[in-house]
Image (cartoon, rainbow, N blue to C red; front, side):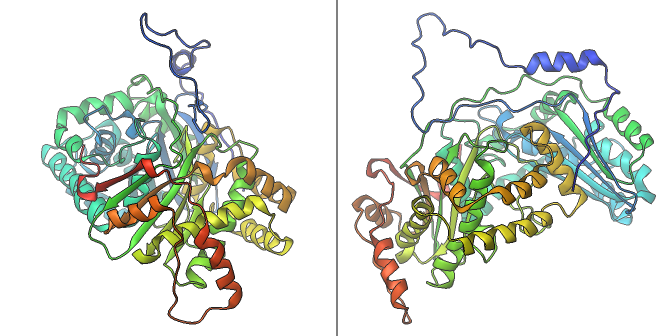
Length: 531
């Protein structure tokens, strides 16, 4: 579906020019301070920070529809966990949560919920590394009342001390008992962030660290809201029965936000983590495996679509068509899920099995995920994933397989844009990546691809030697020894398997893992994201 972006002309031109001047990177990098050595030259696998495009302050994206009574609103702020000050990790997410859920000057948190309930209205907030999204959804009959509540969360937040303590306690519990104890899937993925982005603002969990959250005060939250929830960081999305009056009303109200925020965080080059391994040790009956690498390839890169195709062939999230799913789960019975992602993936819970929108990132990562695997088969499953990834660069897909995946994606990508909120999300993402009509462009690219063009992109972008690995397991030392030894990892089955599968196993058993024996770290999960 084509999207139409409408730029708000309400703001003064001077504000737009000031914002552009503030965010434009210098033409020539400043020199090093006297006496300091120059930075080391980039190494193969390092990924510099190429700035995203910056929309004008409060750019308005409108997708008007007359065939629905439901109004969708989406406020996307260019702020996220990268704006957390050192030692106060979790501040941006907690600030957003307190504003959205902690009540307004007129209403307590409980009264806010009571007001939303009879409208059957939706008000949600989500914070990622660089983006925070406040979304709303309501029937047009309740729009005036809802619009006041929706904007008051930003303009007149209550900042109730009791709600601050409650939400901070929830955030601490999410790290201690959710991330570290109950959710091996997310733990592995957050561990991969920490490994790939060591020393980088992306490295810490978006929800914060234990010591970071403990250090936060209500005054920190109030000050942070003024620094980052500002007009110059905001894109406004509207969909449904949207008219000029609604556009004017919303932009006028949001004009009460601070005009200009704190200077943007300058993201550093991400150093290559190729061959590094993190093993998170905890009591668990299974092993979770995450692997990946940071890539300079993001939306807009000519290789993005063919690489996305190749990784969909390996395993689209929670879909049964993927090679990994069929080879590791269906034929070998190793585990539950085996998937691959061309950019950072966080499931949009409540909207199918799709990736969230508005996860715009300056530096992206490719990843593969296997879970849960019986510990004895952890290394074999990891070898299997690397084997099938590497095979795509050695030989093109058969025409039959290529046509199957292409046909699937021609239909499946249409499901990604089946709601107004998701269509708005994609349109807003495109402002930052410079990729108008992104999904239409993907479907058009599918018609031009060939097995050979996909293989060529895989060779350029998906070398297994770039991979770093994270495991969540109980016998961390035993796993570390297996990885260091590099010895074959034989597998036994409870039932007979066909000869062709066993023949392929002989290759997988010997598959070289790009693991550096000197770069394997074991860390108790109870200490992870502590500070």
